[in-house]
Amino acid sequence: MNQEFAESVARFRAELASAITRSRRAAAEARSHSAALRREVEDAAEAKTKPADPPPSDPDDEDFSEQTILFRP
Image (cartoon, rainbow, N blue to C red; front, side, top):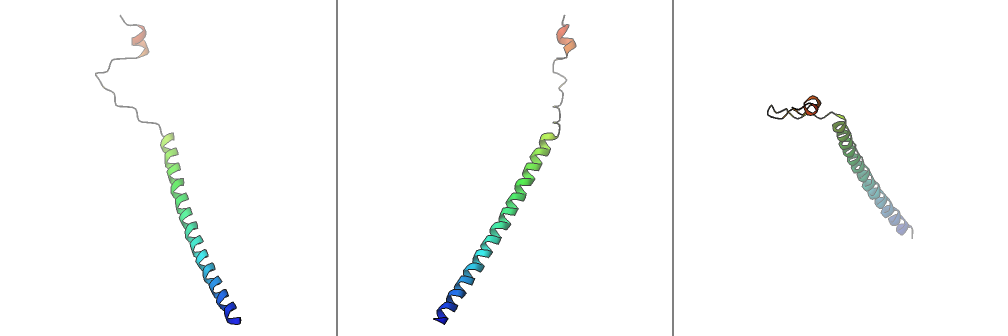
């Protein structure tokens, strides 16, 4: 009976150690995923707050200024 108990305790400890290892790996993976997502969100927010570069002007475009539109001949 004492031998069976010792084997049960040994199995329990092995299973517990395995579960702890799996949980640590899962936690590390979650932290990594969270950090990557945080970087993605920060990059998106930064890109959104930066003013967009105006498109290059084309000298062949018509003049659509208010002055031109209101006072066309």
